[in-house]
Amino acid sequence: MSKDYIHSILSPDLDFDTMAAAVWEYQYQHNSVLHRYCNLLGLRENVFLPISFFKDFEIKTGTWETETVFESSGTTGQIPSRHFVKDISLYREIGVAGFYHFFPQKKYKILALLPSYIERNSASLVRMVTDWINAFGSPGSGFYLYNFNELEKAIYESEGENILLIGVTFALLDFAEQLKYPLPQNTIVIETGGMKGKREEITRNELHKKLSTSFGLKQIASEYGMTELMSQAYSLKDGRFVCPPWMRIIVSDIHLPSKILPYGNTGRINIIDLANFHSCAFLSTDDIGILHENGEFEVLGRIELSENRGCSLMYV
Picture 1 (cartoon, rainbow, N blue to C red):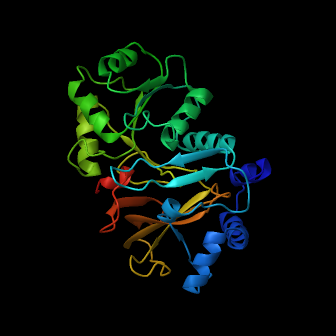
Picture 2: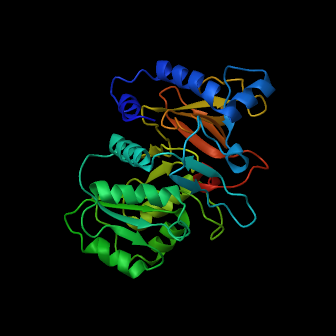
């Protein structure tokens, strides 16, 4: 993916449909796994590569050397997904641009509560937050495991600063239960979902209610991303996610993947991520959701018998 391509998909003049059509043709010709899959289905339209293929195949468009491999966390016994990345600097540029699309462009004291992620060297979430810290993190930004007292001290010593607290669900709940005072009102809290087997699963609404009450904040934000994607969607409130301009959600019938459903219907979440130029931009997830006419979408859970993972573990 050239710098010119990145700049074109980040441009305010992006024509998504035209670009997506061009990327589809290119990937159909140069991604051997996608090409074979289409041939087996006998289809060329409304085809989304099952995200589970990232467990079994090296998903690449073209031939190139790998700079980084992201691996999913999963639980014991699960085969991790592997996302082969050609140029990590492009991931950094997309991650920063995606964040700034939803949040004001300013400096933040970034405090990351990501146990079970920070302990792995191949987690894309850790790389994304590291890129945030390097791009717009103020002094004192950093990662925390289970040292809640130090995290609390870092927050309350940041009077007047813009604070960004991003955390995995179970760790945010643990932190909230021991918090002595409400968080400063200039704090943005982003939950990334997932209990990782540490706690009983709860709905996203229940989670946000608990965190809002404990943190003393009106809204809790959410991030929807995965190992296989270069981009992320965000929910600023009410559990409804919004994609950046270069990413789009399409909902299809659970049993007939090529049957696209109208707005407001529950089905399988498919994703077009134009930043996935080097891997595959057209992916079919195992998440169930609803796409609304204004482009917002909800994640309702997982398709039966699929593996649990990340932010999809919580039902709205």
